[in-house]
Image (cartoon, rainbow, N blue to C red; front, top):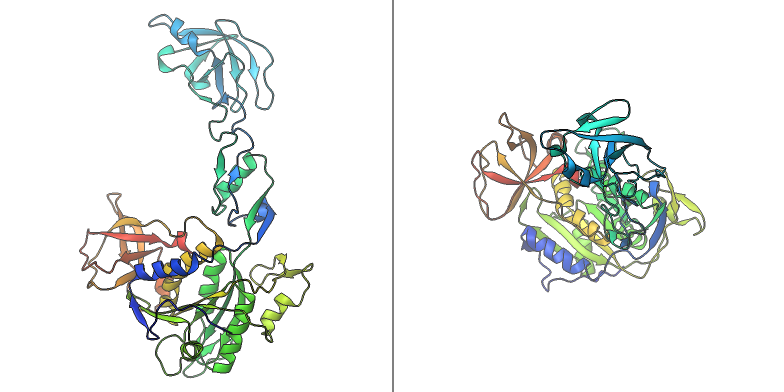
Length: 464
C-alpha cells in the first residue's frame, strides 16, 4: 500500500481550526470529484440517492389550467357586471369533474360546478368556493366584491414549466423530490452509485456486544454508532469489525479496505499514545497527515489517501468480491440485493481516522466526515444550515477552540426557540448524545455565553 497525500511538509501533527480542517478536506477531495459510476433506478429504490444530472421537465405541471378547489367556475369579467350592494347571480349549466374536460361552452351569466383539479373550460378563469355562495335549484348568488378575476385558478405550468430544470444534479432525492418526479410522469431516475465505506475500530480493549465482560475491556460502541451514521447517509458499509493493536493486522486491514472501498473510516489509534499503532504505521508509510483540531470534544484526526493494493481479503470482504459481476450480492446494511463490488484501481481510497472516545468520534464524524462523504457522493449542499437559538443557561468557554455541546432545542413559555445542554459534556458520555436533539456550536472566537445570548445550533435530525 502506498499513501500519497502530503498536505504539509512537516511530519509532526498540525493544530488546525475547524474551518481550516474543512478547507483542507475540500482541497483534497474536490479534485477527485464525485464517484463516477451511475445507476438508473425505479423511484421507490431512489430514495436518498444523489441525482446524477440535471433533470429537465418534460411536461408542464400542471398540464392545464385547473380549479384549485371545489366550487363554481365562471368568467371573471362577470364580477364587474354586478350591481353595487347586490349579489351576482349566475345560472349553473353543468358539472366539470377532475380527469375529464367539460365539452360545452357557457354564455354570459352562466357558471359551471367544478371539482378540485378539473380542467378550466375555455373562457372561464375564476372559481368561487362553494361555501361562499347561496344556491337554489339552478343558480347561485355570490358577493362579487369578495373575489378578483382569476381567483382560485391554477395556471398551466404554474409549478414547473416544460424545458426548465426540475431538479438539479447533486440533489439528494427526498420523498418530496420523488413525488415531483412522479408528477412529471417519470418512473425511474439516474443517480450516482452509493459510496462504499469500509469501517473498523482499533484497540485490544474492545469487546463485541454479547461477549463476556473482562477486566480492563470495554464494549465497542463506535462500530455501531458510526456505521449507523454512515447508513443514514446512504453509504454502503463494509464492516471489518474491531482490529487489535497489532501492526501487521492493521496494515492488512487497511490494504484490503483501500482496495474495496471509496473511503476507509477508522476510530481509535490516532493519538500520540505508545500503543496507537495505526498512527505509527501510517507515519511509517510516510504520507498520511495527522491533525490536532482545536475543538472539544475531539482533537486528533487523520486524513490521507491510500492506493489500493491486491492481497488476501478479510472474510467479511470476501463475501463482497467472491461473486461475479453478473451476480447480485447481499448488502451488509439492509439485506437488499445490489450489484457486486468491483475492485477499482482508478482512484485512491480516502482515509479518515477519528478519535476513539464515543462522543468525540460521533461529533468529528458529523462535523468533518459527513461533509466529506457528501462531496464524494456528488451532493451540491454538503453542509447543513446553522440555526440560532437563545441559550437557557450560562456556558463557560474561553476563546481559542470550537466547542460542540450536546443540546436540547425547545420552545419556552413565550414561544421563543431556546436551547439547553443535556448535562455533563464529557467525550465518553454517550448517553448525552441519546438525550440530545441538536449540537450547540460555539466557534473558536466565542467566549462565555450568558443566559439569553444567541448561539448556533445544528439539528441532529438533519445530520444523522
